[in-house]
Length: 324
Image (cartoon, rainbow, N blue to C red; front, side, top):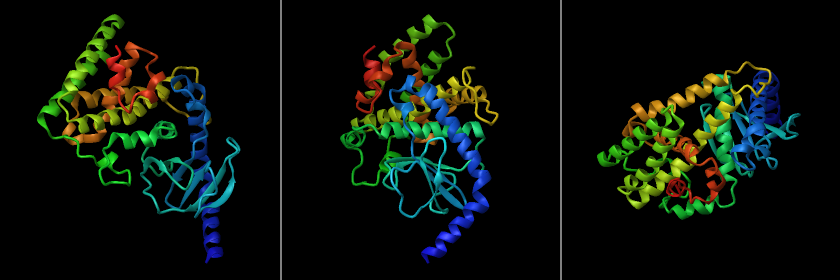
């Protein structure tokens, strides 16, 4: 049976892998090039890692840069760009639409992303998605990450980690909805103000108002909100910042025609549109991606060095605003 399985996997490799894998490998190299050029300017050490990545396809999954030989995979080759191993297995164990990061196969946090051409995304957006998940790997590789999660005391009886997605935040509470809406309106006002001096003044006023507004939340809901803004919001902010860098004229793409300017504009517009038109009760946790990204952009208006203390913040954006 083991021999038969090996033959089936290798047939799948040679029949289906080459064209699809080539595109994915070019896109992964694109993401690495952007990160190596600029990621370290945003986040110390972010640009130095070859992150483990699992590409999920219909016929097979490809595991790049595993820290050790993963059980259930077959070594296929060595990636010329990173000198990392490429392992392969039959597909079907994850959804091909997946975009997530979690500990996997003894390699620590792994970015798990549907293959390009399988997941519904153009090549430029696919690169941005991978960079977003790479940033989650950067977060999770911090030595205090898992102890910090435990200190939030939000998991209850859930030891699977799914509480981070399913926590029962007060999404339908009218007072909470109004508070989030007020913060959203103020953030949009800051980010759309063309005058730099006025923009900073508005940003500082937001910092003053923020603590008072969030005080209506229960302690647990406040910890959960701050965590989501810190984790998902800042990941979306990083995705935008890297896209804007790639569109700045100093970046030369590898092999494929990418419109990073359109991507950056689209990401920024989506953030603003969510804050202008989105419904907390409808979007729920996903709303916090845009809210947190907008807060990070506003912090840039106040203090460009706020990111230096990102991992000392207690999984919260509150301290950055309170310091102003």
